[in-house]
Length: 94
Image (tube, rainbow, N blue to C red; front, top):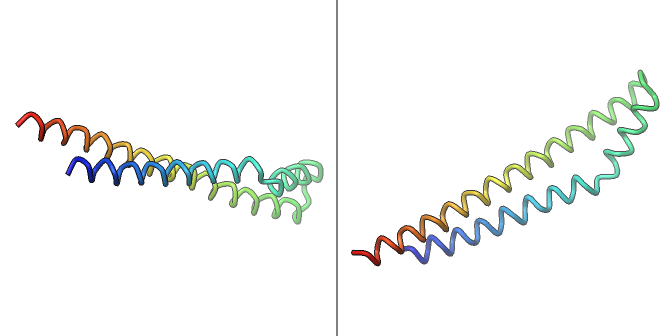
């Protein structure tokens, strides 16, 4: 039981960290967001540029939620690893 918890926890931790890293990398390399922000700030009151920037903000929000979800998934994996460690100690002491 302890080995299975550690194995599954390791896989979940790996998936969570990779997903969070991919979302953070996508946020860092998002040139469309930077361009839309720049154009909207240079043209205040222009509805077209503001709408484009709002769309880029929605995309950025989804990337941020994905990064947070990946971090939480990794935390769940770490919890499973620790649960497997506790289960291994409990099985060894009886």
